[in-house]
Amino acid sequence: MSETTKITVLDNGPFLVAGSFVVTDAVGQPYHADREQIALCRCGRSSGSPFCDGTHAKIGFSATERAVPQVQD
Ligand code: FES
Image 1 (tube, protein in one colour):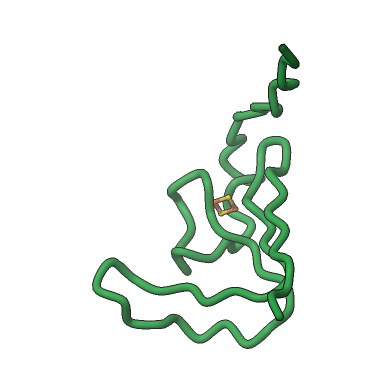
Image 2 (cartoon, protein in one colour):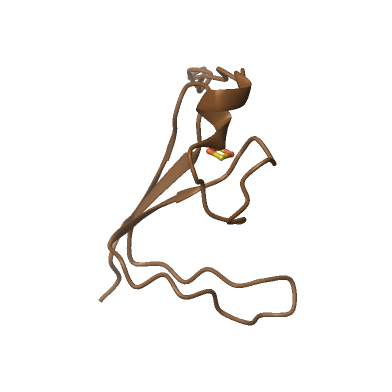
């Protein structure tokens, strides 16, 4: 049975990840993240990377991409 993982792109902020997930580095070593929801840094300035530490708000990070509606044929 699979559990859904939800990733939410916050306006001017991190990616919120909720559900069942494992976060690893580039060689597959897991980060300790035993919570049901985490925030992954999107601004590149967190001192706790890959997790968001709130720095995005202090530096005025701006990235408000929104999902583009899919066109039906
Ligand atoms: S997105 Fe929050 S510190 Fe980078």
